[in-house]
Image (cartoon, rainbow, N blue to C red; front, top):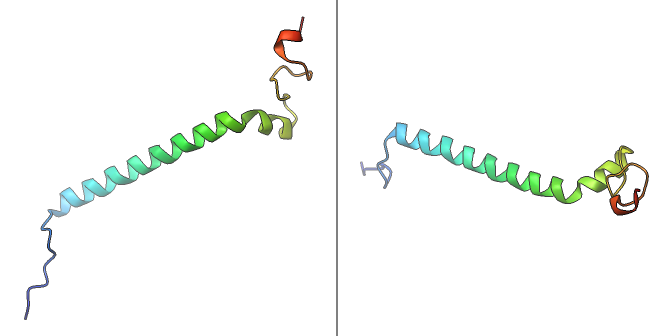
Length: 67
């Protein structure tokens, strides 16, 4: 019978550690993308939820014209 062992003979512990590191890195990257999207679209979410307006002041006026 021919030898059907994998071409790269990587230790199982190393392979599992690399898998864990890969998923941690992927999770951090996706969390970073989510944070960037949240920072970009947060004002619109606040208007949809009725908490604050686009300027973040609560009464529809920019902060420069509050006083």
